[in-house]
Image 1 (spheres, rainbow, N blue to C red):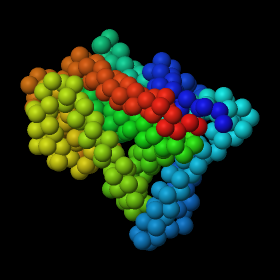
Image 2 (image 1 turned 135 degrees about the vertical axis):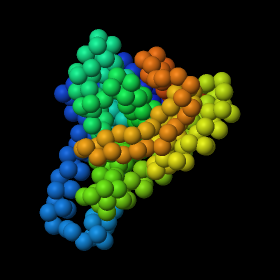
Image 3 (image 1 turned 90 degrees about the horizontal axis):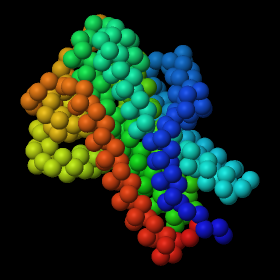
Amino acid sequence: MMQFPIPSILLIAAILDYSIGDPINWPHPVQFMGNAISWYCQLVFKNLVNPLALKLAGIGLTIGLILGSGIAGWLTVSATAWVHPGLGMIADTILVASCFAGRSLRNAAEAVLQPLLAGEIAEARQVLSRYVGRDTTNLSAEEILRAVLETVAENATDGVMAPLFYAILGTAIAIPFNFPLCVLPLAYKAASTLDSMVGYREPPYTDLGWCSARLEDYLTWLPCRLTVITLALISGKPRQVWRICQRDGIKDPSPNSGWSEGAYAAILGVQLGGTNWYRGIPKTKPLLGDSRHKIALSDIRRSLQLTRTCFLIWLLGASIILFYFVNHKVILI
């Protein structure tokens, strides 16, 4: 059989995300996932009202979408590889790259910061509303900066590092079992998409999204802690960062976002959290970090750099290990 350079798929996918990201108007796996979730929710809410039935429907949605996304990736790579092995590699690489959101996160932050820097606060609010669920109409410049930094800090884990974690795990599985690398990161992306769309404690998703929210919490727990540890080491003050995360991370209802945001707050010396408004209703989130100075544009730029550095450390470290096993012919695919 052909020797398939599986670790190189991971590297090329990371390069594609960094340099190109998600091209506008190109089909994206998350779009298909989102359409499937929306269709399923409409069907369920039209026919079910009983809380237990909604929970069972939520379990079915969670299992179906996660397994379906992984299988769809597998079939896509297998079908293209049947035409030509090189096409299979290309398909696998593109699908893995679609799971990383580093470039998208960076573009979203810059899209908000540009009008803010130009003094066009109304436009900055409008652009921000595309990326956050909170009300943005009356946000001050300082509150906009906090919203951007919180978005970057939270999505650094579930949008960037956790998909990389499952891509690395997928690579380790792909080498001995002839397994497309994209399967695990696509499955995680499905779980993350479910959580962002239905994983709410408020109606109408309280029962339907219960399973999705719980599962995403479990799947993200380890990548989140590894990310916090890596960031703490990068910062040069690991004890301080870990102490603040232990102190403040547990205050957040989410077992992961509080730790992720807390790590960035600790490193940057700012404070995240506070009162946000959602559809006119105030919601107070726990305060994370110590406010040594107000959030500045430089803090957001540094947070993006921290995420890139963390991503690069994981990527290079995993690639060296994986290439070692391939070159020593532990398994050839």
